[in-house]
Length: 429
Image (cartoon, rainbow, N blue to C red; front, side, top):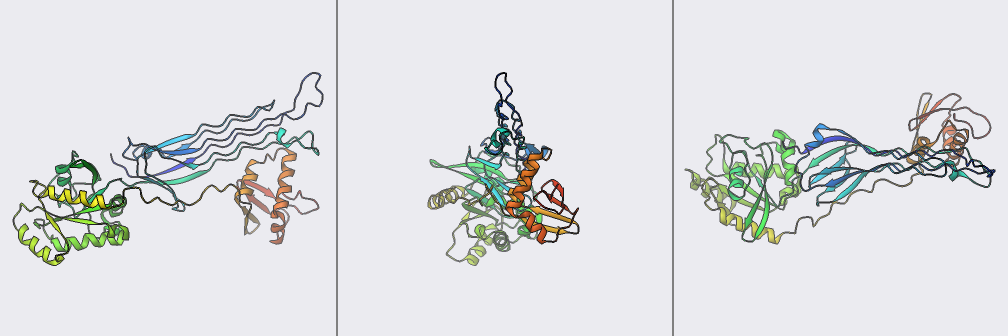
């Protein structure tokens, strides 16, 4: 089945933890610390696979996690890095943060790779804390947690030309006539429920044609799955607007249909409304089509060319395709406009904020939360180091300025600490 949307959760691998170890060998007194560092966690990487055409795989599995880094060991042996997790997606996939709707990746080109979640760095072993002031450090770090996100995946078909029009105007019949695509065709509205692609050859040149399910009034507001259908037109360079000139369906009027479809395009996206259009007056093999065509041409005036066609018999299709080929040659090639993505994964951010509730203080900030997650509070030296850094960053002073009292709870990331006043830096524990 064709699936063009999915919501998933990804988590990069946590870093491995460093260890506390000392060199113990006969005849080597004061061997010193030799605890190794933990390995880096694996990244979550999205890779464009041209052999895929749907997001079906992500409908049945929603949670993805990369491998964590290995822990360090004695003799300064560092843990191995966790394996990256590579998720394959079809060309045209965009990736958004489900919570902020921020665009994280726009994957178009075959083989294109994007790291969306980065693995945590490995914690340092006690060998890294050796100094002139501390010759036997009994401190190590836990691994940094890997990044995690709830993601929205959306597939926008990569096509040069899109077929638009009301349901049952003959778009699928036209696609099957000009390409090897075999869309479902039946004499009732909404036969086409999913987009179909076909390769069209005109002379020595090819272009990709997309048959989009028929639009109805209110499509730009999501009526009739309008958003799902209109999304696939956003990457096209040209539209073929197919109009049922025979008006053989009850209540249909070619002029009204023309204006209505253009209105839906404009309200959904101004970019879609400004795409070049080639007008295809279809079903010219049926009665009333010639009369309606005259009225339609009079409404448009002489500045717009209409191509009378019959998708059923093939009448007029060759002239239509050569005009499409001519216009595509005048338009910028696909991929000329690159999507500008926001900068993500800041390396360092020492800023923090404090959110206060009754008897509870929440301290938020990238660096301070990472420090809390990597501190081993079971080690006395580790807890003291954490306190010193809080003091240097100004966190304790900011809490005291907010009026924190004894036994008030302070939360930093997933760590909960209790405040106690007194001399020295050891005020949170």
